[in-house]
Length: 101
Image 1 (cartoon, rainbow, N blue to C red):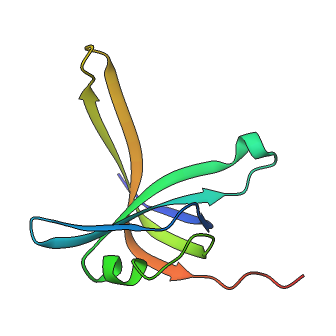
Image 2 (image 1 turned 30 degrees about the horizontal axis):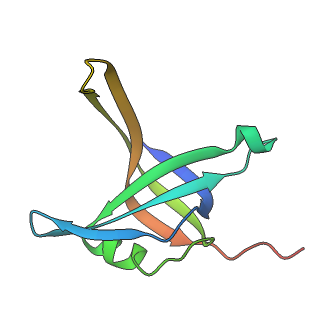
């Protein structure tokens, strides 16, 4: 199975940085355009290593191309309900200049 995703959108907030098991990570959320405000795509993105170091320099509102793979985490909540969260593990993050109008 091929698991590859490409997203173009804007950072919703400032990136969050940290370390896990001595590996740097950066997390951010990308918002893509939809036909209406209620159809906007919102996708959490996590980067590691060198990509994380680069992504840490991004700012809220920056437009980016993200290339990576989907990852779905599943768990049970404290009340026993099944939960899941899908995000992108990015292998490449490229800033995109806004289109001139």
